[in-house]
Image (cartoon, rainbow, N blue to C red; front, side, top):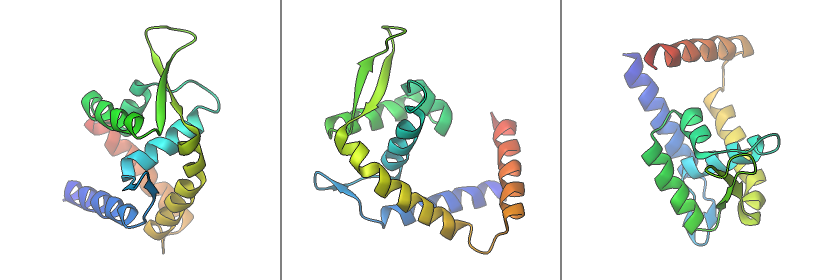
Length: 140
């Protein structure tokens, strides 16, 4: 079944990222923490990033994102600041420490992605990406 295959590949991808040590304050960053750093870093170049953006981007529940962000705040990787446009919202801002880790994380993710796509043509990757997008819409 496709669902089992998708879950298996996702687990293997996360496990691979976990095997690439990237320590901050003595603790290895989780794959989700790494991906949040990348997403917040890239998106914040052009817009404010809020918790709800991460919920939508990763298709995960609010409580899940809240827990990860609280841990990242506690570890000094990000801060929440009031939005300049809506004081009720808190925008996510990476700390200098997290920004310093960004290039390493991005390089690790690119290498993992290359491994994941090894032996696939650009056309196969584009086709598979389109299929995944359709599957994502079907299940929403």
